[in-house]
Length: 165
Image (cartoon, rainbow, N blue to C red; front, side):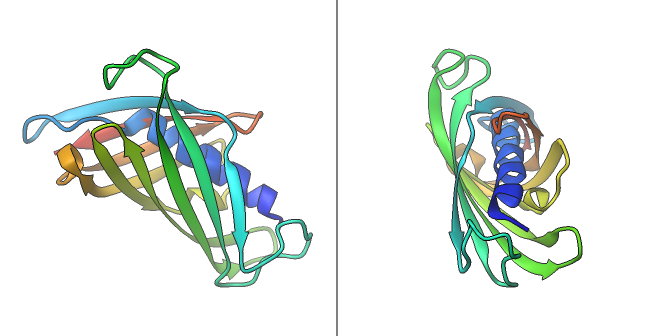
């Protein structure tokens, strides 16, 4: 399993999820949606050589950095404006004959706080990946929800965050 094979789907999934779902939480019981787009991500291998064709060992990880751009006007900025970044760490917990499996945890920094999330979307070749929103800081402190990331063939992605407080 190469890092490129793992990193691209993970980055795309994360970027999409963050683009779509990062939303400022409103009144209690409300649901908000944020939409983002991201260019191809930057991946860094930890504990293995990402240029090797041999699979990474259990316990190795990939750190992915994604720039968040507004897919629609939000945070007082127009569509296309860079409004934040995502950091995602995916740790390999098991290897199988086709692909590894593990857990990814991340943080999405946006202008008014940050959102934490997790899932295993980076360990599949699916075009669409999902992550669970686990909380955050600022208006996102009590939020839960999901991120849906749609991966593009060029390595970019779009994300929709659906937040409930």
